Length: 79
Image (cartoon, rainbow, N blue to C red):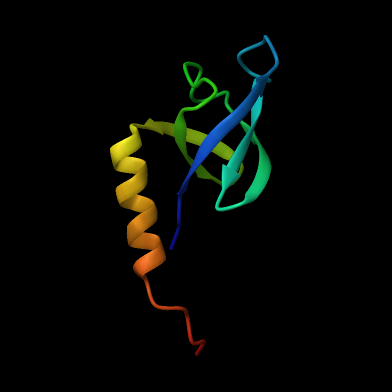
């Protein structure tokens, strides 16, 4: 199963669309993420990230709804 998590774009760097990246915050953790697949993403946007790539932009309401659902999930107990 794959899980794509929303995060907020904090910085954007790189002029070339193929090497464009940014710092994206996820619940207090910041990671460098490729923005090549979402060329219109800007600082303050929320993006869905999977495997180090932003794959879509989200509006604030959708990001908040998704993050609330993730927080409401019970912790994994293992198998």
